[in-house]
Amino acid sequence: MPILTHPPSTSFHHFTDNHPDRSGTIQATAGYNIPLGEGWRSIHATYYFTHNWRHRRSSLYLLDRLNEEPAAIDELPSMTDYQQVMDSTNTFDSRMRENSHRLDINLGYKFNKAKYGQIWTLLNGNITLHQQHLDYQRGSIDTTLCRTAVSITLDDNTFLDFKNGQIGMTMGIRQVLPALEQRIDLRDDTDPMNVRLGNTRLHPSVTPDFGVSGSYRFKRGYHYMEWHQKRTFNAIAMGCTYDNRTGARTYRPENVNGNYTTDAGYTFHCALDSAKKLNLDVPFHVTHSQSVDLVGTTAGDAAMSTGPQCSKVKRLAISLLPSFKANIGKHHFDFVCQPVWERLSSDRQDFQDFSAFTCRTSLAAILKLPWKLDLSTDLTLYSRTGYADEALNTNDLVWNARLSRPFLKGRLLVVFDGFDLLGQFSNVTRTLNAQGRTETWTNVMPRYALLHVVYRLNKQPKKQ
Image (tube, rainbow, N blue to C red; front, side):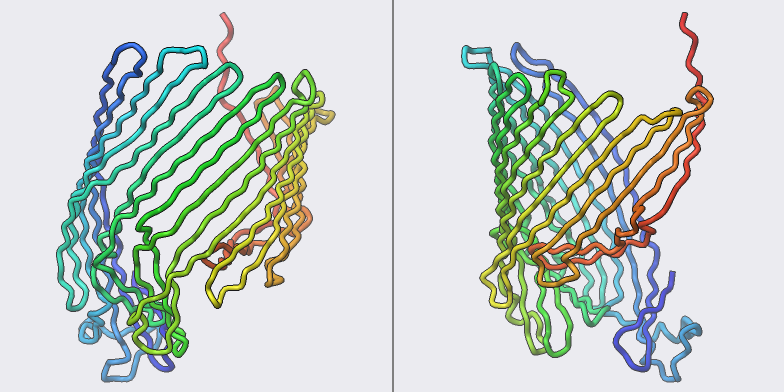
């Protein structure tokens, strides 16, 4: 529907006519199982045909170019008048259609059992043929892009099972194609403070990953260790250049290299009693990653003349996530403490290295009370410290509770919920990662009470 937007102007306003997007999908699927010889799992092959189409259209009019005095905000000029002041550079019509042919294959093989154990492997993968057609019009741009490309996803899992444990190895690769619209040489300055450009030289991104794991079982629990790494080549980053003079930002998609994540972990699980009613879990993880982006500043109008500089931010995170669970009679208790220490560092001159500590401590209980009452409650403390901005250093104590009781032999259930009984939970969430700071505002009431009444209409048949 037509809406009014307000660019940084002192006297006039623009008018944007956004037509509803139209899209559709047609899909057909066929599958076949091929039985194989001894040791092989049957090959399960599935073929997917998908036809997608989408039509997007948006028109922008520069009302400040009208001859007469501009209309009031609620009195737009006639169609004939503002057709003469259409901003053709930021008015576009996009028609996209695609036929994709995808073949999924699942194949497994189990080797003959040997003295050292049993080896088996499972291969999952798909290959997709994309046939894409885009008709795009924007100002002086009137182009048609066609692309026939293949994307591949493969995952292989190989395991050795022995008497008291397992050793595993995983390998995979994933390929992602850039959107066709990103490959158009265009300039979108509908919002002059946030200009977006295209890039005709974008390449597909490829992410290989590799991991190993091992577990050992004993009478009351197990040990589990894992190591995993993945790298992304030609990752698509939205490069940003900031103009110090005007405050405008210019974005352009670019391929970057150097993104990787390495993760190592150890988990200890043990039942503290023979009945396994008291259980202890101690997971420990270390993660090291590098995030590559493109960031630049300029004081001129040609925001992308030299291109933004490569920004590499490294993150080291160490987490210990112990938990204790207890079943005492009809009652259940759960205690969790999740401390996480992380450090962000970079060689950028304008980047300040820092370390931060977060911890989530929670105590939960499910209690069976007299008069058929059930009480579920949890008390959680969210703590964060080490940030330069005091708004990020918080301690929030959140208490939730639920009281329920069945009636009419269980057919009627009455439940009363209370959320954030202490009133300390905020609807503003602030997060900080390698790419920057994000504040999320949630338009909900964090503190409220709710009454449920549930009546079961189903009737169990009588036993014969």
